[in-house]
Amino acid sequence: MPINIDENIHKSVLLAETVKLLKPQAAEIFVDATLGLGGHAEAILSDSEKTRVLGIDQDLEAIEFAKRRLEKFGDRIQIFHQNFSNIKQVLAKVGIDKIDGLIADLGVSSLQFDSQSRGFSFRFDAPLDMRMNTDSDTETAADLLATLSEFEIARIIYEYGEERLSRRIASRIVWKREQGEPIKRTKELAALVEKAIGSGKKDKIHPATRTFQALRIAVNGELEILEQFIRDSVEILKKDGRLVLITFHSLEDRIVKHTFQKLAGKCFCPPRLPKCVCGASKEIEILTRKPIVPTEAEIEENPRARSAKLRACLKLT
Image 1 (cartoon, rainbow, N blue to C red):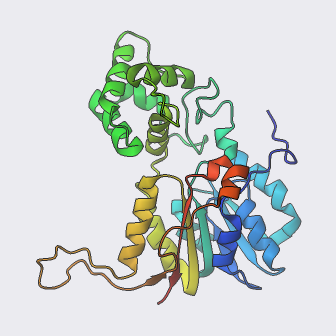
Image 2: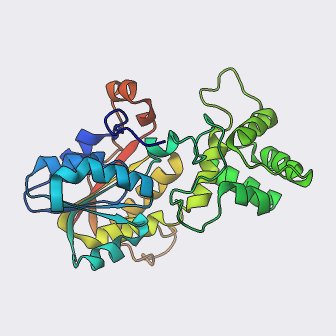
Image 3: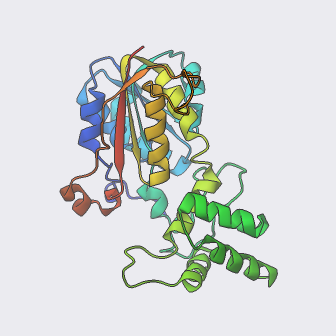
């Protein structure tokens, strides 16, 4: 179903806070490493007539939407179909060495969650795909459930979904597979999880939410590339350049927090060592002592913002 660009504009999370931290100035160059539907890029481009933005996204459907939304800015916006982990290659392609700022909103976009065919949400009965880049040849969530061992499925659900009943869920998935009924669709998986672990009256989220999160992270390798992406982003910033990252679950936020601490010179060596051997050096200044979170007003207007956390840093060297 084609997207109506007038009726389905995605509400970018913590938009005003992001622009305030990036401080766009005339002729500066920014990267929106997770372009999505273009909300953050639009705000940066609107803040100054000469600001440029390089937009990166691995979702072709989102790119087509963003192109239409941002076409009014002409050649001040360039869009690339890439994973954000390839940020250095994208800059090399256009001959840019350093940039003035970078924003990455690491959440799944409304376009993906609201898709009735991509498998990100159990609100719709769809194939268990969950690939952010549907043109890639990576395995789908259904592929993982059909091939991985019970131990590996349980590990993914426990580590990436922080689901304490992961073994029970994995056992049910494998049992169904062995009966010749592999889980292939969202509604099937949601029903299986709910049956496996139940739904308490005090639960604020559906019991399958953590399992779906875990599979999405595993399919797209979201956590494995995050720390290196942060280091690459800091490397390509000019002196006094700013990096803003928005996360939506504790695993991502923990990686961002710890990587920022390392780059800010915090030593992570065991306390008994006579001197630092981890190579800690101060490359950045952390601008957010605690993460910035949405106001109650923003959460009321956009409930998907409720778990967002923003952290930012300034390049020193």
